Image (cartoon, rainbow, N blue to C red; front, top):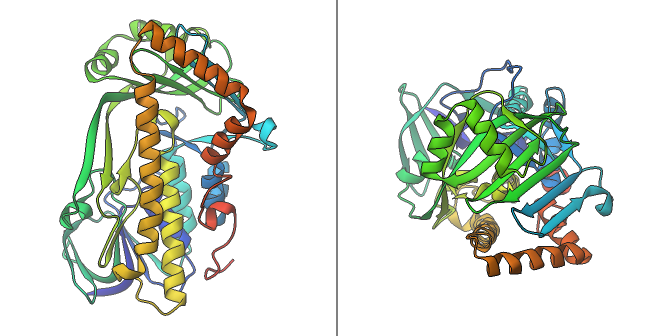
Amino acid sequence: MQNVDVVIVGGGMVGLGLAAALKGSALKVAVIEGQLPEPALDEAPDNRVSALSLASQHILQQVGAWRGIEARRLQPYGQMEVWEQDSFGRIAFDAASLRQPELGHIVENRVIQLALLEAILDGDNIQLLSPARASSLQSGEAGSLLLLEDGRALSAKLVVAADGAHSWVRRQADIPLTSWDYGHHALVATVRCVEPHEAVARQIFTPEGPLAFLPLWQPDLCSIVWSVPAARAEALCQCDEEQFNRQLTTAFDGRLGLCKVAGARSAIPLTARYARDFARERLVLVGDAAHTIHPLAGQGVNLGLLDAAALAEQILRNQAAGKDIGRLANLRGYERWRKSEAASMLAAMEGLKRLFAGSNPLKKLVRGAGLCAFDLLTPLKQSVIRAAMGLEGELPALAKGNNLPTRPK
């Protein structure tokens, strides 16, 4: 049996982000992951991308992963445009008005994961077990015992569930889940457009749902996230490319000219999830294991990386103070902090979704007037975008660009 301090189940962006934040500490950390990504990137981008906020960039810089992202590929964006189809309502955000070089970066999820893997490779206190899968979990007052399918056993003071929306660890701990189906699928694909994206992130609200065009590193290349009812998503995935291109261009108001899909299309069911508990004795949840939200504001990965940074801060402060890092009483601060943030984000996404649902003319008129009024209220608009970027609010030290006090520089 191997004894460690922290076992992180899940080697995705959030799990690896937590491991990287704990690198160089006095804690022994093990990461369990079933399948790591292939190191070589294809010429064509992956369909799954994230809009990283400034707070997420700070976290990735502080844990040593940002240089790995820059060495591969990323696309900064300095402007954002949001409008409603067949309406005069429009909002525009500009990094220059905030005295920032950009609003954020669009990065493929696999690029983030690979950069984080590089960041933990030289961590003497980090052990990566992959391919490996957990088969059973037992937790008690003294610690947790995790058995792997290959027969290995690990005892730990704390087990972290970073294993996604359908978290095995969360189910093993029998943590109740509040969830609701958004009734939509997110269709994701990469497209080439006649007009250059000019480093602008764009989103249109259509009667079917929001459609986002996220700029990629080539001037005519965008990643799309199209939220539509399930049957519509299936039809869009199965129709021929010419039909898809025509429907997509029309839905986007032809803003970037004719759009041509480049590669595979896939659809992901959208479900809101919120775990009743983010922490139990010897167990804590981060990222999608704790919460999932609608992608219309692109905040899912940012929320998860903030979880990882906040948990690392809590663990290292507890360890420095001589406290048991796995006791529920010593994890309550993390739970209160992150449950509040997740609940606020879920409520905001649900409110936006309901606000832009339907095509009643009167409702569209009110929405259009509201968007225009919001666009003119510069202080309020700047406050909203600053919060989304991670420039305001209660943030972990890493998200502010500060090193953790108990972690080496």
